Length: 212
Image (cartoon, rainbow, N blue to C red; front, side):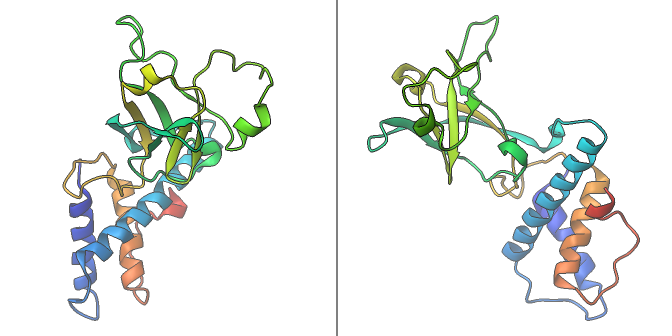
């Protein structure tokens, strides 16, 4: 386990030991943003490598849960909605959004039954008045900007708030929160951050995102 702060500090130490000497102009926020960006690159590289090997799931280490996300009602669209608690990694078919359900979705025997199913953003307009095969009785959602929209969420479901699991880009994670990143991925992230602030420096022979 590590933290965003520890990764940023390791990168900062590498930068300060470079040929140009300590860089006092680097702000912690700049380092954090660079770590966010490098983390996203590493997660995507890991996903596509696994996919090439026949593994289509996202590594569970990249998934974070957000509980009790509040739901509001958009009176203009006549639809329930919520603000995503964090940005998520841009992966095919929006699978960066791994799971969405109400906090009390079912019985004790099946407490996490019937999660919401992602549909295209234009689904409400395309399906109006139609019986869509395979989706009858399913709870639907679509993404628009920083929001999730729920075309058929009931008022009773909305009262329970949401459990949302995302492949996050770390922006929604506090810098001191423990995060599960394998050492080889930490090294790749640090290499990319160092390269961003020291582009003239030749990096050591550690694994980069292209080699993961």
